[in-house]
Length: 201
Ligand SMILES: O=C(O)CCC(=O)C(=O)O
Ligand SMILES: [Fe+2]
Image (cartoon, rainbow, N blue to C red; front, side, top):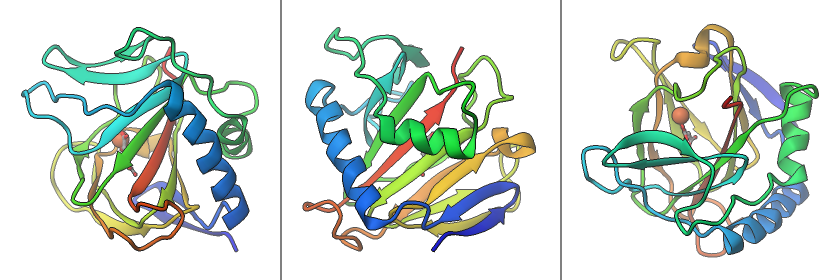
């Protein structure tokens, strides 16, 4: 059953994808990862991120000593695979059928991985929301403010939950403090996948 809650302006659709839809999505993502393997980007400060990443679509998000940016090719030089239809369907239902995302970032959180508080602000136009899908182990998602610091609220995101950050919350700081490794049986070796879809151009 889907239950919608709003956390500091961020919409959270708990249970948006049922078990069969989650399994389908994992199957489609396996094909993407086979063509565009996960890698660990370096932060601009030189430390590798604990989250492993890949992407699908026109652009992939990338980071190294030169900074954060979108790239039109995987580090191997290959074009990014197309965004799976099952991902686009979620975007059409919750964001827009008229404008599809340019990038579907794939984040993989293994045991101990986390993502520090940040804004998604490498896109040209912040009028389009950011949509993200959680699969596998639970992740503790934290939402703050449009400036760094201050109060924040957290919610555990479970497999099948979808988050939409739009309107005033489009530029809110957010992050993932920890995952409950092994809490889901969707991925045979555990871990959490998060898909983040964005309009880039
Ligand atoms: O893993 C998540 O739920 C959030 C990911 C995220 O904020 C990002 O990739 O920018
Ligand atoms: Fe983000």
